[in-house]
Image 1 (cartoon, rainbow, N blue to C red):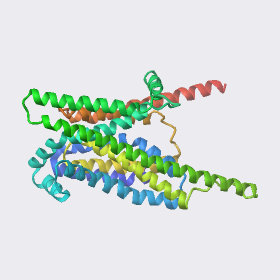
Image 2 (cartoon, helix red, strand yellow; image 1 turned 90 degrees about the vertical axis):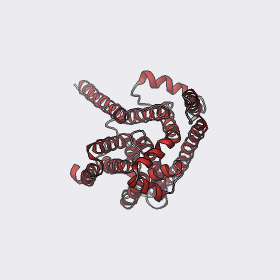
Image 3 (cartoon, rainbow, N blue to C red; image 1 turned 180 degrees about the vertical axis):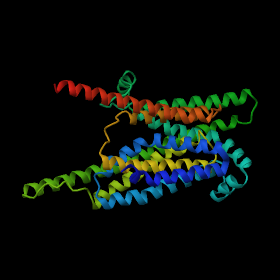
Image 4 (cartoon, helix red, strand yellow; image 1 turned 45 degrees about the vertical axis):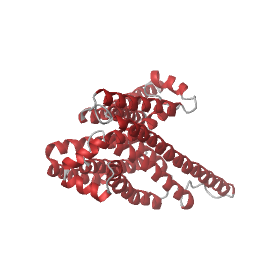
Length: 371
């Protein structure tokens, strides 16, 4: 079962790691490995969401999502999107950006380093909004209850996450401008670029959230209609089949999943810039990670174990929050790639361990009550 589900992922991993060694030696191997783990950890909640929706769809639409969807996720968001970000921020053509990355790494590195404050501000704000909206939402299941309970109460204040994000962006831009001025550098004029890029990241998040909300509302309407038709069939003496959604309802589900998938993919791409500026290594690492997310989605649908590890979603969002802050810090200061890569792994690991302990405690309690 595991080999059948994850077989393609294992094959892509082997090819990707070999390509990394051939491209840049063992250092490149390590970066690609970290990026793969980062993408899997950041996108675990993506797989959970995908599986939760995908299991409601019929076999045809499931196949469409797992074939066309993976082309969009791997080749579109993970391979093309990093090039587009670099091309826009460094004011290059996409073909020129790829050619420069492959043929003149020093010049490419110089351009990306020069554009990094804008990339970090844009991505940092996008990721920060995801994190803030998560921790300010009141949830039945809380991982760090001592922290999440009071934050959920604060979350009742309208637009609080937007206000906090803008304050952090303003502090980042002012700190960048002040330090550049004190050191006599020529980057003081880029404080405005940092500010504008951060606002663009915030707007992008709100657009993606708005589209997701729109498709979610459409999904609810279609599901309600399907539910009413099933009840009518039951009253007419026909058995209630619980048939998986198809047609228009499944189409809306597919569109909704693609919007969600794009937004989660964006997290991984932006987070990857905190680890490396090399688009080849980025594409290899994120591509490997994306394959595992797809395989994990299939596995969760087939096994029906979505609720087994309830804190993993929390761990993934805390990792997103950590990456957001790291990106904003890297506007002015350099942070080692290992720290950036491992902090997400540690948070995901801690949330997984907490989930396992919770499951054991519940099993013990159930056994005690059963006596």
